[in-house]
Image (cartoon, rainbow, N blue to C red; front, side, top):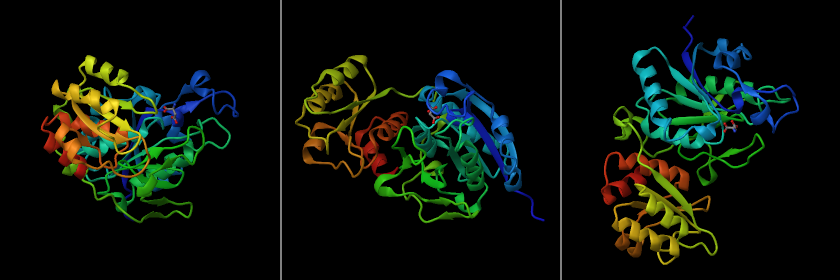
Length: 334
Ligand code: ASP
């Protein structure tokens, strides 16, 4: 009999690891509950041992609101180390809170140096809740990480039987299990109840081994802030970012980012002082396109990346170059 694939499951916390005393507590658990270890999460789903030989470890135990630029390089380095030092591992599952999962996923999509599957999962209902999705999501994530078709597709996010790309996925609903979507880009496939893992598409944007970002060299990420436009918004928040001396700024425009509005106008001053500014959009779909005015004024356009994804690419880009054209090219490629 062929040996089972080896999947390493790495825990970071989140709702998937949360338990509380009432099965009806689906909203108060961040205040009333506590988090269990990854081994305890796995013990709840012994069926995973039929799918793969499981190894597990806890990297941290946090709500995902506490996972960000200070933790991302460490998480990426750790995943790269597992693939380097345990070459027999076929895939990795990373459990994570759903709040910032899409941001960690895009960071890893750009920094993991392996084509083996890295699958993120979490839960919308704590492990102790009636109808929790914690156990099934963990099972399905392991199923995908163990599947040969999952290789070479970048970082995958698996919840609710759906497989998403770490580049395009976003949380769209604060409460319900049907929350992760990819808007226009669509999901990649399903980890379905009939036991099948099916892919329909791959992202064609460069990722993992095809990017120049080397987390071994990154001590800390340059600070990049996001300022959103809204009806009547003025230069106040852009000024605050400028005064802070942040390395970069993503402006989430009300549409394609008119350079005549107060935010971009204030950002032009910041660019003169060396800040790199990318124009994204607060709309869910579509590209922010380059115009002669944006080109002349020195902006980068974020293509179809959501503002918080554009921030991650800009942070990483600034670790290798400050050249605007080189950074713009990355926004068209990653
Ligand atoms: N507050 C949680 C977190 O992001 C939500 C979740 O895990 O689903 O860690």
